Image (cartoon, rainbow, N blue to C red):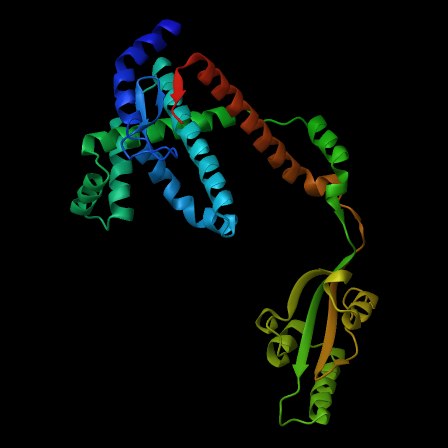
Length: 327
């Protein structure tokens, strides 16, 4: 490995010196300068900038106008991008070391899909784009092929950690049981009647009484909500989903949580509004039972194990491969 690194440096060092001379005192680099070298591939600053571009709006928002924080976030993102790009080079090398092959048709199909989805099916627009980023069709074809390889290899790493034992799921549940605690809640529907400017309160109460009578006669609450309610959820049958006491104002929380499943409340007046509440389902506070959360826990553990497996694989590639970064 030392001999290999020495040979690479002897070939690339003069070029790196030339690029380094273009660096400003503050560390800014020109587009064609070197950001990193992985094996025999040079990763330029321009490549890093291209990868960084989509993240700039979020970085600007996260920095909240602080130029120091903005620069810090940019540098962190650049570092992550360089790490990812160098990792990809090592992954591709491992693929070929393992005698892997990608059928040419896979690459052809991916390029055609790109032309259709991103360039309106026009090859001329596609070629113009390649020219704008300084890539030939053959170079772009190689990029696409390597993307397919990287996605395949990363997917392969993750699949190696797709089985979780029942014991581990139970241990996770016990360790993080507090995360599965749920407050008392009800599945709430409501009808809201709002007094118009030229209406009297008597008209509002008459409408509420009419709805209440229909409910007692057995009319469906969701149908009456869709017909009468002035609430934003009216078209959904007044369905507010699961709510806790703390999510409701006190004037509604007390009568709502006093209801039994299938019960509706008397009309409740709050300023110029009348509310009729309906409890579709009640859930007492407590821990969600393991059978209900088993699938979620399994997904969490599989995801965690996949990340660990991928990181171990990459650590080995980084240890055995050659990577040099230029600050």
